[in-house]
Amino acid sequence: MSQIRSIKGTHDILPSDSRQWQHLEQIVHDVCGRFRYEEIRTPLFEETRLFSRSVGEDTDIVSKEMYTWEDRGGTSLTLRPELTASVVRSYIQHNLGSQAPVQRLYYMGPLFRRERPQKGRQRQFHQFGVEAFGSENPEQDAEIIAIAWHMLSACDLNQTVSLQLNSIGSSKCRSDYRNVLKDFIRPNRDQFSETSQKRFDTNPLRILDTKLEHEQTLLEGAPTVSECYTAEDKAHLESLQNFLTAMEIPFTIDPRLVRGLDYYSRTVFEFTSPVLGAQDALLGGGRYDGLVETLGGKPTPGIGFAAGMERFLIAMDDQSNVSKTDVYFVCLGEAGLSTALSLTNELRQSRFNVMFDPLRRSLKAQLREANKSGARFALILGDTEMEKGTVVFKDLEKGEQKNILQKKIKNLFDNLTN
Ligand code: AMP
Image (cartoon, rainbow, N blue to C red; front, side, top):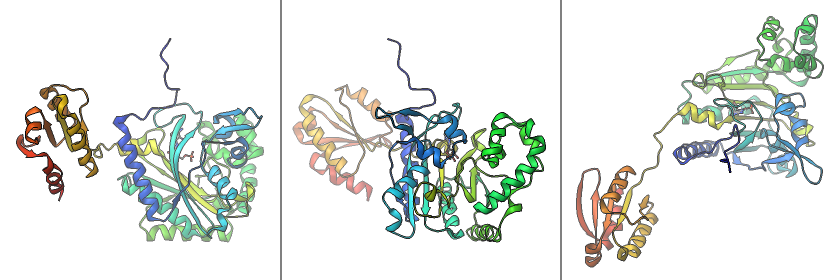
């Protein structure tokens, strides 16, 4: 049989990388905890209409990237391509809004999009993100961006990233802007791609997201959404900028930032990192005041962000967090095995990382392994030691060794760490 391999665009997280993942996951838990956000875990698949209704029919995600199939019962199901829709679905289903006026949630997990794989772009990838429901005030926007900033700082990325910020206005502003933008595009409409021409009717704002150079040229000089802001939109964005300045979070206003999904309103933002190459978006988010209502809940303002975990790890490129072996236990001969297992257990109960060799190899081979494992100490138990009730304690760094009584081992190690 030909060898079975993982599917294109999916990756195994191998032992050499998993500690870095755990490290990042721990930072997410710590930072979100500091802001008093609670974790929510939703299923990996949902009804397809959840995503088509919220993310938008004519977005890239819904129109060409979803893994969708028909269940045996005839329902169309989809592997989640993003998490905000699932979190909102859960928020409505469990009536979380009635439990507290502000719901602060965070999540972590895999997502699925059938994109063209390249560095930093996979078909199964991972995001962490936060969502806050209940407040439309700009201090809530500031808190969400602050969480992102704390995450980036905890990962030592805050010095290299840049934050682009914009407001795409309230729904009144966006409907005015749609007309202004269409008036600008109309004379050259036939020079745009088929996709953009379709979006001209369905969602003209999405045309601004184009990656096509000739379309970008056609869009030069286009009016920006800021020209249609209401007084409240302006005040909201101004307050947010003041709060970010007060927290010393640097940002630039990018009047062309609209972000790809349909459900955003007012604040949108993106952190990019120059070390990521072509796929430089590290974290993106925005306000979605109409989304809960769109999905059948009571009108509830909300804001959140999602960050790519693979991209965080590429940007961090940090090997300093490898967990160390404290003790390598060498047992020579079958007679000592029970004692060896009991002693290693005792040390693990005292929270030491202990590696045990199950291959019954020679002293030389096991000590070579011990050095390779980076262990600080080795404990050696042979027939002589068994007779005397001792064990050889070897400091692999200093190269010194001594005999100690087996019953004193735990004490010795406990004292070493004090
Ligand atoms: P989005 O949900 O598209 O706003 O993406 C949020 C973040 O997820 C981006 O800033 C990226 O860091 C990450 N991301 C999006 N798509 C992919 C992908 N296909 N592979 C890896 N990371 C991704």
